Amino acid sequence: CVQRRGLSCFAAFERDQDRGGDLRGVPKMKIVEYRLTLPLTADEYHLAQLYMVAKASAEETGKQTGEGVEIVRNEPYTKNEHGLPPGQYTEKYFYLKSKVPKFIAAVIPDSAMELVEYSWNAFPKCLTIYENKYLGEKFHLSVETMHVNGDRGSIENANKLPKADLAKRTVEHLNIADKSNGVTIVKDSDPTSFKSERTGRGPLAKDFATSCKPVMTAYKVVRLKFKVFGLQSKVESWGHYYGIRNPFIDYHRKLFCWIDEWFGLKMEDIRRMENETARKNKAKLLADGVEHGKPVPCTNGMSSASSGLAHST
Image 1 (cartoon, rainbow, N blue to C red):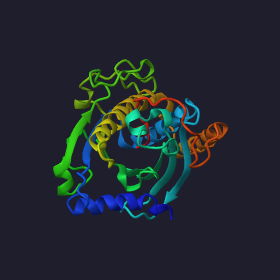
Image 2: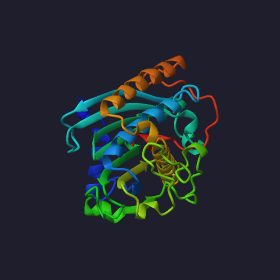
Image 3: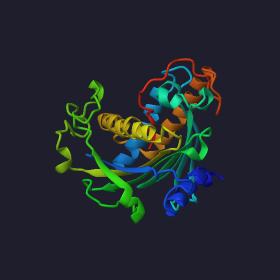
Image 4: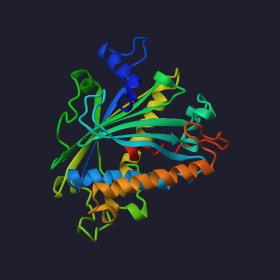
C-alpha cells in the first residue's frame, strides 16, 4: 500500500520519542527547524518547488557515472498513515556514491550508497522520509514542512510540534540573499543581482524578507539520526550542515532565479515535466548499469560534498 511506505521507520522514531528517547540508551536525535522566507506567494512556491525538484534532479542525474535520482512513483493518494490530507505521493531512489564523505563510507558498503525517499505532498503541509535499507532503524531522516502565505517567519510552532519536540528544537532562519551564510553564490543563481523580466522581482537586498511583497515562509522541521557508535554526533552535525542546511539555501536561490522559467505554469505542465524527467533519468541510470535498487559499485574516492537531498524536500 503506497500510503504505508516509510511508516515503520517514522513510527519507531515517534514511539521512542514518546517514551523519552531510544530505549537502548542512544541519545535523542537533534531537531532543527529551518525557516525560509521568499518573495513569492505560497501558491507560486508550490509550483516553483516542484519545477525546481524536477529540473535539479535532471541536472544531477548522470553528472557522475551511476549517480542520480530514480523516480519510482508519482501518483495521487487519498489516505496515509501520517494524518495528512489527500495529495501527491512520490517515491524515489537516490544513488549517492561520491557525495558521501569518507567517514560515513567507512561504515557502509559500496552497495548501500543509496537512500529511498517517500514523500507525501498535501500542500501546504508536506512530509518526506528517507531510509537506508542497510542501516535500517539506525538511520532516520525526515523533513516535515508547513508553508504559510503572507508570513515572514515569525510563527512559533507552524508545524504544531508536541512540547517534547519543541524543547529539543532549534530554529535557524535561512536567507538566500545573505552572502555571509557560508554558501557560495553561483553566478547564474545569484538573487542579489537577478531581476525577473516577467515579474519585476529582484534583485534582493539582504533584508528583503522584512518588507517584500508578496511573501511566504516554508517552515521545515528536520529530524536526523545516525545511530552508529562513535559516529552519531559527527554524522548528524555534518548531515544537518552540508546535507540539509546548505542545499536548502542553494536550491532556493535557484528556485527564485528560475522564476521566469516556471512563472505562469499550471500543475498539468509540471506533471508532464515530472513524467519526462522520470523517463530521462531512468534511461541515464540504466545506461550506467543502475537498475532499481541496484547501484553500480563505487570505485572512486568519497568527497565531502553535500548530498543534494534538500532540493527534494
